[in-house]
Length: 222
Image 1 (cartoon, rainbow, N blue to C red):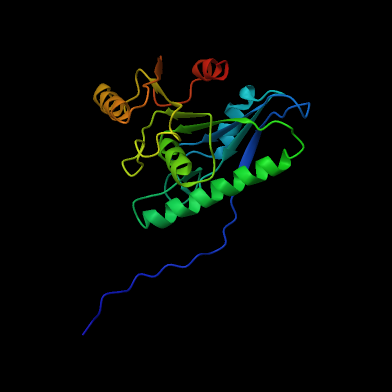
Image 2: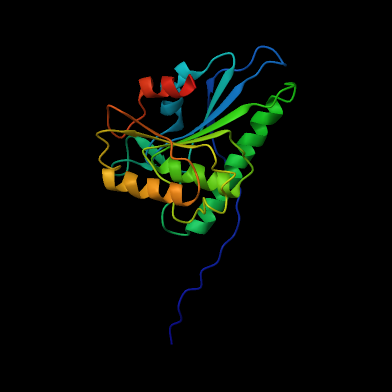
């Protein structure tokens, strides 16, 4: 009589990559910012880092980690993208990328150990990276001053009411022509944020489901 296969899990070593878009404080006692930008589904960190290089300044370091799962975007050859997770074995995927992002954060801080001031941290998640950013903050070691969800939302498994302190500086950015972020979805997210006792902070730019340079510049100026 046939038996059902038994699922088992094992931890393995992985090699991940991340990119510095540039920027670092000149003086050890200067105020400085540290931005983490988590890309969307099917993107590559190298391309995002290149696009965001303009944000890097002597007082702002921009770090772009790449998701652990890479794949061909079309067929079995050609352009490659990366994904943070799928619905399969999702708990393990989340644990893996939270541990990975924690490791990146620890590495960046260790490289800045000579700085007398801790950085003001911004975590920006775009699209699929928005859910990833929320889970990192909820389950990981990073404590950002600001969390920006761009073209995305807090995933249902993250309790923003229970983790109110972690999500106190939650902001949303959406393109007015974003096909994935409809008015109904924005209103649903707004209701959830207000019900958790948090302030609703949102801005819209003229555009679609993409990072917009002018909107990024405005964020960086605040």
